[in-house]
Image 1 (cartoon, rainbow, N blue to C red):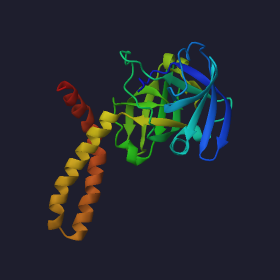
Image 2: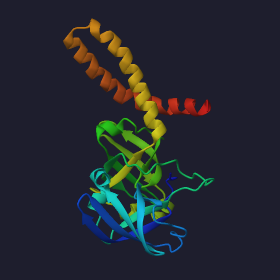
Image 3: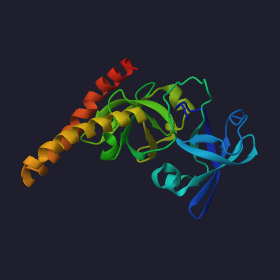
Image 4: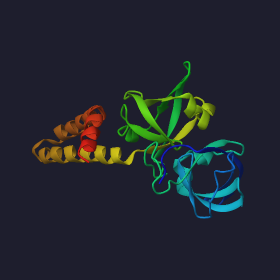
Length: 248
């Protein structure tokens, strides 16, 4: 488990590719980052939970990346010399400054716009429609391992905006990102559960009506339902999540 608060920036010192496996060697900028780190420990590397496979010294460590992680994350494009966000796994009783993360990246997003007004950045990220259903204004998610809040959502462009304060830019690799770069995204799990639950409940009710309709009407209703879900569920999510939290 991780908290989404990036603790250090590491540099990729070496990459070794084998059949179905990639090993990366990271150099931690902070010599204290690896205090107590042991082989088998978990570290979030740009939001991807990786296992320590070899320790050379206090600042140089190997991690193995399996094929499935390479397929869906930006680690497939990793290059020697690149910088990367890292976070140690949370300890019992640790302060959760961001939100609870698993380190299991769901998809990649593409940076399509960056604005740099005084004292902060606005970054617009494009994502596939199947994952955009979980993104709503004021909701949160993890991007390259950092817990961030969504500012605005553009349903037509299948994109959303995040704002980065100077401290976030200083402590992470976001200041190095440019338009066209990809980032790792982990959806907040309770949001995903609520959205899927609402969609399933509505779909079940509609299915009860479908047998009484002609095939052409069924298809038309299914298309309309999907459009309604895309538009309405994100707008209802802040209210649903607040009600859920009030009853905990």
